Image (tube, rainbow over all chains, first blue to last red):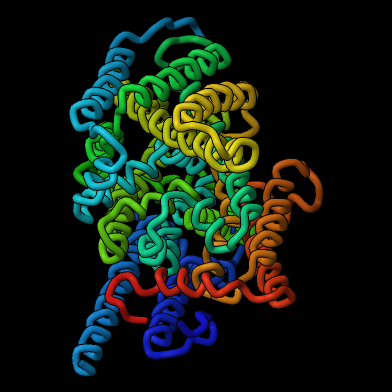
Length: 101
Length: 500
C-alpha cells in the first residue's frame, strides 16, 4: 500500500476522498464559524446588534434562528451529501475493477 | 425554601422507569459476548442511530444544556452546535475507518496504530480522566434531581445517588443486563418533549411545534432582556468560537462515542448510522433552547441557582401537575444513570485491562480480571462522589471540560493515525502528552490571564492544533513506523469495497 497522506494523496481514491473531506469540512466551518464572524463584522454595537439580529424569520431574530435551528439541519444535509458522494466513489471503484477483470 | 419532603408521583415514575429499563434489558439479554456483538450487528442504521443518540444523551444534554442556554442566552448555542456539529467531523474523518479497523476500544486502536505499550497506557489513563470528569457532571445532575424528588439537601442527594448508581451498575453487570438503547431513547425523548408542548400552550405560544413556537418568545426577550438574545450578550466572539470548536473536536475524540461504531455491521452502515444518530440528537437539541426561552420568560432572575434545573423550574412555573414535571426528572436521572453506567464500565475496563493487567500482572485469570474491574468501578464511583460534593461548575461546563481533554488528545492521534501513515510512535506519545498537559492544566490554572485564552471548557482551539503540530514535527524527526503499520493502514482504508 502506498503512503497514506491526506494532504498529498496518491491515486484516484484518495484524491477523491481529499476533495470530499475538504469540501464538507469547509462548508461546515463557514456555516458555523463564518456566520459568527459575519455577525461580528456587521455589528453596530459591542453586543452584536445588526440587521441580522433585527430581521425576523419564523418569529425568531434571524441570527438566533440560523445558529440555533438551521445549523442543525445544515449538519444533517452535509452528512447526507457526504454519504452520497462516498457511495458514488465506492460504486465507481467497483465498476473500474470489473472493467479491469 | 420550605421543606417539601418526598414527591410521591415523581418518585414512583422514577422507580418505574429504572425498573422498565432493567426488565427490558433482562428480557433481551444475551448469553455471552459473542452473541452480544452478533445481536448488535444485526440492527439497521435507524436503530443504530437511536442507540448512538441514547448513548449520547446524558445529564448534560438533558439538564445542563438548557441551563447554560438559560443563563447565557445566545452563548449557550455554542454548546448546541458544538455537541452536534462534531458528528460531521466524526463521519467525514473517522466513522467508516474505525469500523473497518474493528477493534473494541480507543486504547486498543492507539496501542496498535502507534505500535507501543506506552501509547496504549497513556490512552488508557486519558480515557480514565475523561470518564472521571464527564461523570462528575452526571453526578451533579443526579444530585439535583434527587434533591427535587426526595426533598433532601444536595450533599445527601449526591451520597444517596452514588450508592444507588453504583449498585445499579454492579447489579446490572452481574445480571447481564444489556442496555436496550432504542427503548431508552424513545422513553427519554418522550419525557423531554411532552412537557414542552404544555409549557408552550400555557404561555400562549404556537404549541403544535414548540421548537418553532419559541421563536416568538426569543423575539419578545430581545425587547426585554437583549443580553439573552444578542450575539455577544454574555461572552465575546473568541469565547464563542473556542467553545464551539472544542466541543466539536471533543465529540470526535470521546472514547465512548468512537467505540459505538464497532457495533455496526459494516462501514456503510457506520456512515448511515451517523446521519440517523445526528437526527435523533437534533430532536433534543432543537427543543432545549425552547425550554430555556420559556424558562427565562417565567423566571427572568433565577441565575446559577436554578440553571441546572431550569427544565423542572420552567415546568413548575408554568403550572404543570407535579407528576408531569416528574417525567422530566425521571428522564434526567435515567439519562445520567445510563451514562454513568457506561462510563464506569469503560473506565474500570481501562483500569483493569490496560493498566492493572497490562502493566503489573499480565498472567491474571479471567475471574481475577472481573473482580478487579468491579472493584475498580466501586472505588471510582465513590471517588467521583467526593469531587461532585463540591461541584466545580455547572453540569454542562463540567462535561465540556471532558470534551476539551478528548479534543486535545484522542482526536489528534486518531486523525493523524488514520490519515498519515508516517505518524510515528514517538509523535503520538508526544502529542498526547502535550495535549493532555494543556487541557488538564487548564482545569487548574484558575483565574489567570492564560485562562481567558485557554479556558478549561474551550482549550482545544489552541490545544488541538498544538497537539497536531507536535505529532507532525516529532514524527518527522523520528524513524518511520515498521512495515506492519502498512497492513493496518490497508485494513482501515479498504474495508467497504476493496478500493483504495
